[in-house]
Image 1: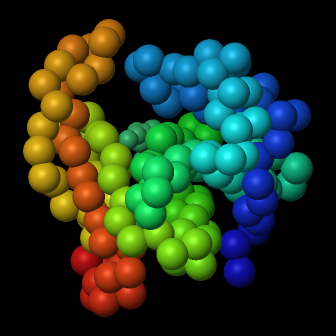
Image 2 (image 1 turned 90 degrees about the vertical axis):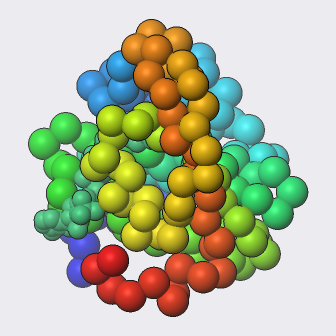
Length: 158
Ligand SMILES: CC(C)(COP(=O)(O)OP(=O)(O)OC[C@H]1O[C@@H](n2cnc3c(N)ncnc32)[C@H](O)[C@@H]1OP(=O)(O)O)[C@@H](O)C(=O)NCCC(=O)NCCS
């Protein structure tokens, strides 16, 4: 069993999310942006992985009709490679299936192969490129789509 548990994010988590955001992203979201996202329960679902009272990872998704958009995912520096992002994605996938979500999409920087490996394990595949997607780095983004229902058919380790 994992030494962390997953729960819905709350406004009081925003300081800890900001620490991860600023450490992990070249264009970090602001406190205000994160608070808006966490508070928008109608179309957003933010979850956190908490270990010994500390937020060690988070995932934010957005629902558009029967589609899920992965808005953000991050693991606290020093805690990568422990399966934290995977367990957040597993929990979100189970929730999405219960909601009848069929497809999922996201954008990921072309150079971010670490995140791409994670996404490919959930059946995401590239369908296009958004040129110059990131304002600060000017990097292109891959547009990925996945069939949420199909994830169980992906062989373990692929
Ligand atoms: C991408 C990111 C979220 C992955 O988080 P993570 O918690 O390290 O992910 P996981 O540990 O679940 O999985 C990563 C790898 O560790 C491996 N792993 C899982 N549990 C492990 C364990 N106990 N020991 C060693 N490795 C493990 C997984 O097999 C996986 O391998 P893969 O790279 O071949 O897919 C994290 O690196 C991050 O925060 N990056 C910066 C932000 C970012 O780029 N976000 C995505 C934007 S689109």
